[in-house]
Length: 352
Ligand SMILES: Cc1cc2nc3c(=O)[nH]c(=O)nc-3n(C[C@H](O)[C@H](O)[C@H](O)COP(=O)(O)OP(=O)(O)OC[C@H]3O[C@@H](n4cnc5c(N)ncnc54)[C@H](O)[C@@H]3O)c2cc1C
Ligand code: FES
Image (cartoon, rainbow, N blue to C red; front, side, top):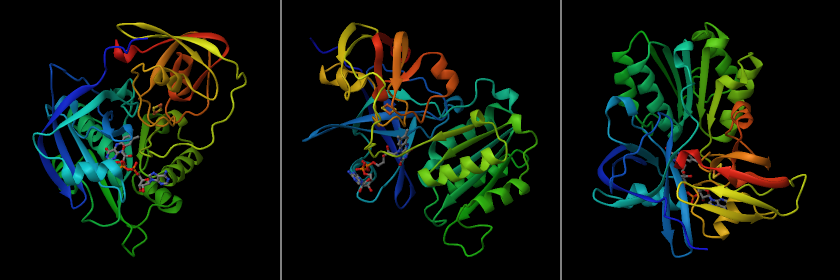
């Protein structure tokens, strides 16, 4: 089978801004006529060629689409991290990066005007997609926005000055609470269930059905917040998470049917037939046939690999991204999907 037309696109670094000693914003210029369209909160997946194969990493877009800002990402160096260190320490203006495109479900609700309050809870580089969403709400909406932003120290706080400027510009609509884990005052240090409940008294929710919560930070941080919010009767559909974790999941549960089935994959230019046999997922089987599909984490966490199932039944081993409504519409994460009880047809609306 011949390889399909590549979905990889090129972007040039046209400016680099140092945000903190360990993080930088990269302004990107799409090349070769690519005109990316994105929603606030989405991310770009970058493809790196290494001597030991292709590797992918996703970075949230920190610019806001409606503001006329140029497309930008913000990267924080991770200790011992392979590509974040490369980006923060080596990439410079004029360099070219390769991307498989834009994806992500960390977006505003379908009808943002029905929402009265937006709460953001971000830790460290988790501010990046929140920053894009906050700027979008402040410039295009009328709602009130509360940001609770955790960092180790003020020095490592990404977008500190930009957030203070926004607070000054939108005094009545935007409240920022900075939490620093090096502070001794418990009201300003590490976020806990107790502190979150206290902050919700300080910044009260007017109506639980009209408030949306966006969480981005370490797994345990987001779990604590989510459980606390659910305990406060916030509807699960109003709590949106973005998981930056890149570690593979070690345990993959077994589908109820482990027999091989045929999967028809429709891409804009071509249709492929792939035999999928557990333990290989639909994505892994397509990759083995050199079919270029979008993906990043391969762990059911990012949403890059999303497709729509139009025929047959698919079972997902893990899903941190899709809501029940999206699943009801046939959306699947191909990296976690196995055909069960017969053959299956899927297509990629995002690539059309
Ligand atoms: C949807 C999404 C959006 C994201 N947005 C952003 C963003 O806006 N800004 C940002 O800075 N980051 C973002 N990330 C995180 C980013 O994609 C990378 O995961 C991050 O930069 C680390 O990549 P790395 O190659 O530097 O580290 P890696 O080399 O992947 O290592 C990460 C850490 O894991 C450890 N590690 C690696 N392999 C193993 C192993 N086998 N066992 C145990 N430990 C291991 C390393 O020592 C290191 O501490 C996002 C991730 C996702 C999924
Ligand atoms: S590649 Fe990230 S969810 Fe499938």
